Length: 273
Ligand SMILES: [Mn+2]
Image (cartoon, rainbow, N blue to C red):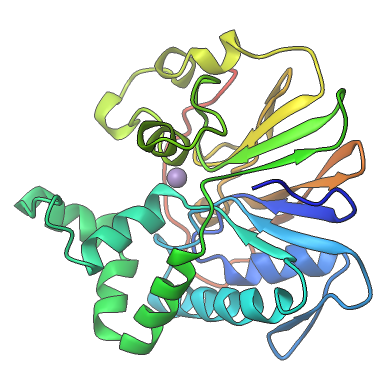
């Protein structure tokens, strides 16, 4: 889970089936894509997806996203690892639906949620080839990654924000905390900063960054060393990445390209103080 420090990393937030924006963001950051295959032979760049690459988009875009990620995951990782993917709560939930997880109680509410929020599940149930590709990728997802450049500069990556006591730990509880934080849908009306106060309370003025996605935001939200890069692509906003190059961190985005219908939501803003 330690990333080699001689690569440059393009760390991309929640894709949610925004395949056109994913390709545009990669091209904007120096990758060439020929007939769906990423050519990374000319550079030392590596790609990291922060999880939640599925759900919310149209079935065709979801299929194209899984196919693109599957093909390039194996293409880029032939000689050395150049493509990493973290597990998001959406991959986990869809996995539980399609593998008929006995601990997932199927209530009418669950079936409604499956249709509304986890629409990749029914797509995979109808398309066994795509299902096999998703399951194959699922087995390769990481829970956290760390880029440890020096005693002054490091970056820890997770899908969701979490307390530092769980960060980069490998017990079951810590893993769950890094994949999903306190539910916003179960706490409607609660300000995000009140729901997960630890994220600003534990923030420090140093360069040991914690970068995460999961909390769809109108822009990149940064407070001290805590950074959220989920900028709500599928909600019609933008897809963003953090770029890690030696001991430098920068950011880049592409706007939603309107090649599919966006989803609506009301923002609950992080670090809104
Ligand atoms: Mn998420």
